Length: 458
Ligand SMILES: [Zn+2]
Image (cartoon, rainbow, N blue to C red; front, side, top):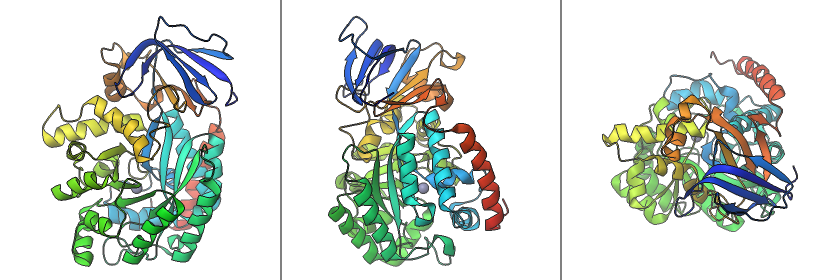
């Protein structure tokens, strides 16, 4: 279906996530020219001249989910790095395998990640740490072809270290500073010019130990000069705090504020190890946080102070991180985990209600991407990024609060139809823009090859 045609979805339960958080039962959504043209209640009628009508009876429609932190290159590593702590996980498995990637591996891994995302209701994402050997431009092209909305963050580094002494990256992942910056600028020029484009280039300085102080300062200036956004891993594990204390005499967030990187155009993943004062500074600087609960639990990194960050006024989005640490890219599952871990951590069942979690996966995620005027909620004038969940399932029946069923009972596989920018990407659970059979076959073959090339015993 062409982007400029009109389509009317009828008889849906619309979870708008608008400022009033309205839920409209038996409502219709008119999509025109890639945007939401009208939202109607059950008794309202409007323009009846539409090119296509789709019955959404028995479905809940939610805003397209926004994954604020994930590694596109890691879906090919699914099942290769279980039951290890972060630093060993990186050194023994993830880095050696990723250091053997070809550009074709990079593209297929991105396609597999997007296939899983669209089948489970994600429409926009921040893909972090894209290194040159994965083929930045090829990945960007595959995002446009798939029809998803992706911010691709170019990895920037000038040191092969991470967090502690002796944590050295394999040669295949090491990049020269000048080359990183040159590629970042060229990709910004190529992909950020078109205001309505689906792909954006961001900057991704590596975690502490991967960049010199001067380089972090340079990235802060570069982001202003190139009018783009910055994302990085920060305060993920205890070692990060130790490293920052030893090398800079301050906490990781204090350091990042000092080098000029903490601001509304920045998105920091994990932020598990924050002091109470850091929490206040995150809110004050209006920096954004990407919370990745499954990854933090599986790698035993810790549980971040998400309710405290929200209470302080900070913006927090949600992320699936990667296949070796999650091991899936299913935001619906991630929402439930985000809710239940905080209740357990603080022994308070009221602390993280379903609506707060859905906000993190939608409106807050949109803000973290700097796109809150276009995506994140179902409102007239916004981009038509819509996800239809089939409620005709035993685990979704009956319902009192649709938000409760979506967050606590639904699974990614309940997603029936997905639209991005007014274009249907998924219909009745079948991908329309990606060739599932080819991608899944290729992924298995490529994983086998990567394991043997890297010499990793997985
Ligand atoms: Zn990550």
